[in-house]
View 1: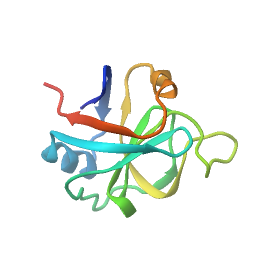
View 2: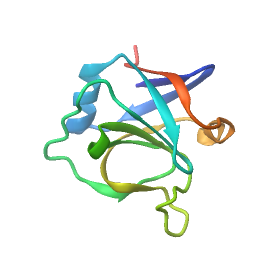
View 3: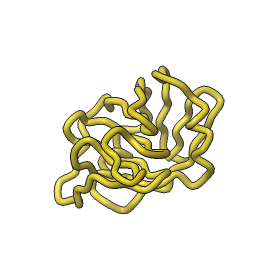
View 4: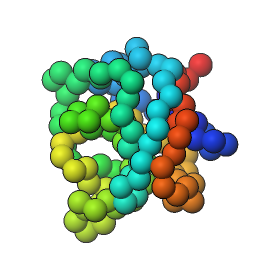
Amino acid sequence: MIITIGTTTLDVELYDNHASRSLRKTLPQEIRMSSWGDEYYGELARRIDYDGDELRDVFDIGEVALWPSGNALCIFFGPTPASVDGEPRMASDGVALGKITGDVSVLKKLKGSLSHVKIAARS
């Protein structure tokens, strides 16, 4: 999957789980994202099914996840307000979708809300 934010492009290697396959079927999408600590999140246009997938609240830096409570795509690049010991932590349980394969430090340079975030399948 490719996430494009302005001139920044992030390549995401999707995991093999139900939620990732469900997300792939809804692409392409364009969403707006907000920041919550070192996390960007934004509501997806179509509901993502995650039936049977493992739920957790702690993620790795660079992981992309689904927050089911808000049907939101989340991108983790550092600690969030819910973090303990600096790990990326979601407000409530979510499903890991994949991991960014490149340098995520570019996300620290972006500020506030992000409009026109494009999410597309890798060609």
